[in-house]
Amino acid sequence: AVEAFRVRLSAHLVYLYSIDFARSFVAVVIGLLMADMINISILQNQPLSPKFAELIGLPQVGSNVTDELSKELRYEVQWKYFLIVISLAVIQLPFNLVHPWYRMWILQRINQNLRLGLQERWLKLSLQYHSDHRVGDSIFRIYQDSSQVTGVIERLIDVSRTLFSYFVAVVFVSLLDPWLGLIASSIVIPGLLWAAWAMPRMRTASLVYREATSDLTSRVQETFSAIRLIKAYGKEDKSQFNFEGDAIVAFNAAYRVRRLVALVTIVMFTITSAFLLGAEFLIAWWANQGRETFASGLIGLIGLSFVVWNLTAFNWTKGELLASTNTLRGLMRQWLTAQDMAMGLQRVFDILDIEPDVKDIENAIPFEQLKSEIRYNDVHFSYEESRKILDGVSFSANPGTITAIVGPTGSGKTTVLSMLLRLFDPDEGDISIDGVDLREYEVGSLRKNIAIALQENVLFALSVKENIRYVAPEASDTEIREAIRICCMTDYVDALPQGMDTELGDRGGRLSTGQRQRLSIARAVVRDTAILVLDEPTAALDAATEHEVMSNLAEWGRGRAIFLITHRISTIRQADNILYLERGRIHEKGSHEELMALEGGKYRSFVETESGLANNQQGDPEVTS
Image (cartoon, rainbow, N blue to C red):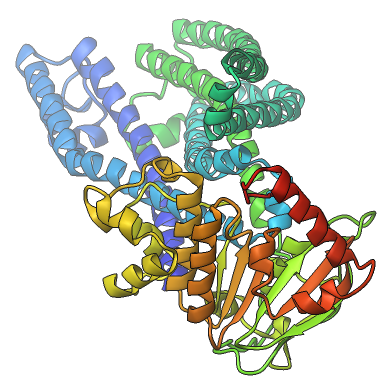
């Protein structure tokens, strides 16, 4: 349905082009005829050509009737002219009302399609891309750069229509005199030479400007994201200094673009003015001599009075030449603006051209339910070729078990579980569920059957209920309440002014870190999947709350495969299988008791170190990486 809509939209764009071209042609012809009527009959009191007089329904004002119009005939011509103008205005009124709306409807639909397509592609890109690019840059591309598509299309329409009008005018002027047509058309040559010099510089300057503005947007986004830290450390002045630095860079880049536009405009004005002065002198000389026009026979056949160079021919030609030079200046300015907008679109297409690192293979199968086993088989992975993150990771997990992954910071724990969701694919080795390689499953169906509670507790400016329901739109209020109970938030939520319907503020700003963490766990629970991933799930909880939450999760998780990353010894002890990861390798695995029995074991040393830190903190059990 979407593709069919886009095809129809392309057809609408063709219709719009055709209408604009027809409108330009008709405007030139009508302008020519009306100029003849005004200059000959109304201003000079002279009869019209017989054919034109018959065309407007006044044969009595034709040149074969009288050599000079009487006052009554001149009055009739004036009324006829007035009626023609009114009639044309009435005929054009519906068109003038509908055309701008139709044009805007097409352009906004195109803009919306591009923006939606860009967001869709952006969401499909791997975490590697998002890690390497600033959020503000992505926001600027999606919101600002994508909007340039309407401007580019408008400029292309305007440029095409302008060129069409220009060459139609050149043709008509050439009928009066070929030399004049040559002069009018030759203005294009210095314009093209000047454009060849200016356009590459415009594209470079525009790209620098957009990148600088994108950096400024990123600075704003990062400042707002870190506002608590900025205020806590009293770094408002430093933040303002950094913002001003980026703002000055963006201003200078924008100034260079505008300066180039001004330079091109001034040079084009000088070129076209010189041509215009020369052409005006020439047609004034011909009009003074009453010289016969080049295609006088054809012009007379059409019914115009331009068979010789007279005041009418002079005024009309002067107007057309002036319009042509203005057109060329406007054309150059529009084309310059189009270069700027095209650089914005290039930044959009740079995203659209990126193929997602993780995507469905052909004939991918849906993942429905975990039945027997999750297995990592000699998995290798690196973000950069020079540094391996995972180096031969192998283990398995079954439904109804809790697998804890522990180890020092930077050992690859989060990466291991990120690969289960196919946020990344292995460089070597494979991960399988029920004997089927993850890459053979549909990415969407796989992720729908895995719930995750992240260490970074992301909440939205929604109610408690809607934040939990975000990952499971079909969840009932009863299921949400059960998830709240499991994460030990019932008393707190019931005490809120509107209970589950209470708004949490931007990014859950009204909650403590521990409360945000428990809501993140509730969100994972309400998804009700066979696989649950918990990344530091209780790092911000006190010992009593942690014990209660983990007990509830253990009871709820019967028959499910649960993976957790944690430094909390009390949490680790509840795992059925513990993997000790260091420098991307699993050095030890087994139950807590089995690993503690290993003399000089890495896990045992880890536990002793963590226990010692906990004791030194005088009962504060919070140990984070």
